[in-house]
Image 1: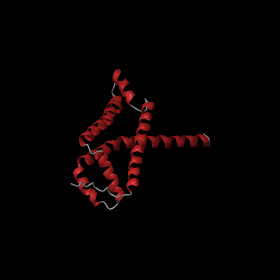
Image 2 (image 1 turned 30 degrees about the horizontal axis):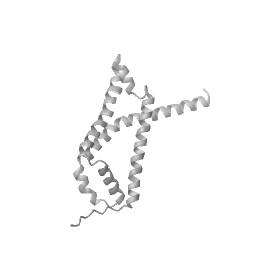
Image 3 (image 1 turned 180 degrees about the vertical axis):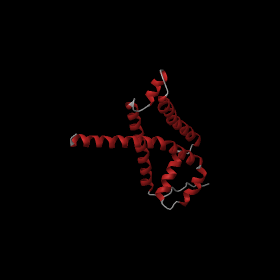
Image 4 (image 1 turned 135 degrees about the vertical axis):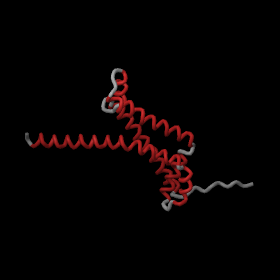
Length: 158
């Protein structure tokens, strides 16, 4: 065994281990993130009560922007349910069923797993990244346009 072969084996092992760690961490953390989002959604009254206590205007403005974007809470509940379905259904039928499925169920399971359907996974990743970038740009643009000041409520004259 020469030095180049040993170096390639070490680098390959580190890359493989890092990939497995990342995938395992994401699989474990995504349900926690979903539960945190659900908790924030259900804790709306507390968040609205706390928004005046922020000392940093950027934090208050970003929280307020998220609230405004998600203020139709029946719609948000449906979005959370659809998001949970998009995560848990492929996880159950893709990852878990893949270990015991045969026949047609194995075909469905292989379609839902990223290592057998990489094109699907990459395209979803690109779409998600683009949507996150758009949401971040809107949030930063709003804060820059308002200058960190709260909007003045309109008054009606009689």
